[in-house]
Length: 137
Length: 247
Image 1 (tube, helix red, strand yellow):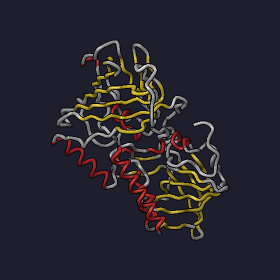
Image 2: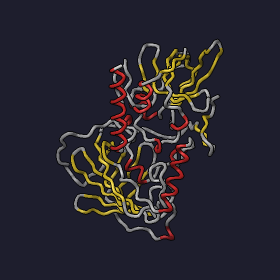
Image 3: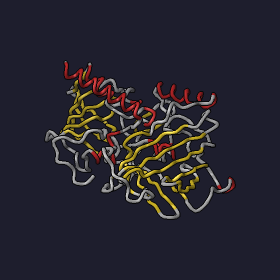
Image 4: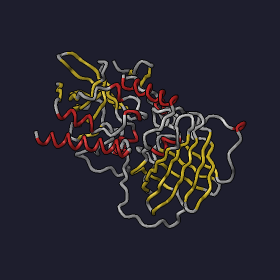
């Protein structure tokens, strides 16, 4: 199921990113006025630099679809609680994202809700909720 | 409805503050400035791990006609959805000015009597020599962190850097020339606080020098992470961007 969040919430989420556009290469390709929530199954979690990526499979209008989501880099994600095994293939997740402007089945991952209800920030901004504080940085 | 309005207002204010304060990507900046610091044990010791916690913003760039035109053209391209691609977007270092004035990643400073090495977590090593003057032009080539030589003035390490032509952008987008000359002053102002003043003098690009002070806070227990680009999936076509492996 996909939900389009409209109104004030979009403005809030778009402006909450405190990274100036000039300093990063790729934010311009996402439509940050649109926030979409999408349910899917993890195919692969690439915990890497310069970006981590989450690949999920979804079912939309009865058809199988695949999405690729760009995340913050490994170092930044680690600081807000991510580890290599935070997401495993087969996990059922809820993703909040800004879609690509050009219609590619891809987007900027803002947050993901795990099967156990924990919420992890995809851009390394907020510490993960519902988890114990990490023991290492 | 009131809750959403408050959230939006808070987000607008924090984004505005971030834009004015010039400390981007605060998310990754996991130190907070020390409310009341104590004097440093050894003010000439600038070693350690430092997170930028304030400052670092230049005044509006005082462009020459030629470089102002380049700046305007790059801004227009970015607005049109084709952002300028600095070296860092393919994982090369941002360069000297960016290393010292954009937060997001910490600096690790190693210090010997002969040399100071400033390493940034997302790449880049700035080596500063205290035992010599600048190399001659015949011995120099375009560099990311330049030819850097330094001496102590009181408790400030004053660093002079030339030969910075390996990059063509000062902040990820705006241009600088091959004659950019940078003076840094590292001052350990407190046990947990380091100020880094950066002055950029570029007569081809700017009509006068520009200066900022970046404030850093110590996090001695932090371990610097590896940062190597093993998975670059952004493809820059010149007309826009694509993601490798996405449909």
